[in-house]
Image (cartoon, rainbow, N blue to C red):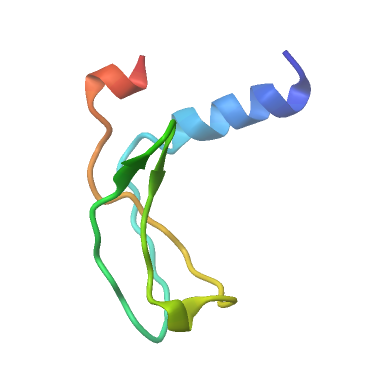
Length: 67
């Protein structure tokens, strides 16, 4: 395992606990992630194309996904 892979694994493990964030922005959209092949997909308004967004998971992962 490379050092980057080790760091990514540690970062993911630390991210599984509940955290608090404060952001300022222009608009908020809450959606459910839909399956798209082997990953998830969220559709956002076309007017957002080219803008920076942040995605925050609001619910814990199920036990199956953590294994």
